[in-house]
Image (cartoon, rainbow, N blue to C red; front, side):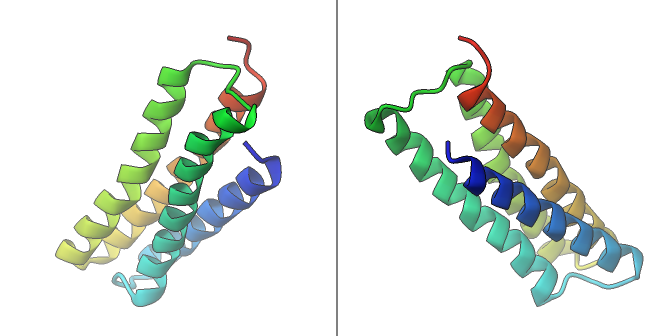
Length: 122
């Protein structure tokens, strides 16, 4: 995996998470900005899926557990979709907080995927 891309992903996920949590605690319902911030996280995750599929063919296989990597990746892709769907259905400030928590947990999963890909021995 490309380290700078992972760092950018983590930064965007943390920023989106903090944005959503602050907006939710301030009493704001899901807005286009909060949903859009999580949509940006989802686009970066889709790019990571493409990179993960192409990287082994380019001579960059993961050094850790493939099963763990793909479980994190699938979870990270599904989590923002579930958070946004729930936020749009509920339309409360707490759903905005949940979107923020989802984005922050995605940041942790993305960093863990980087560790599995580059650092961990097989």
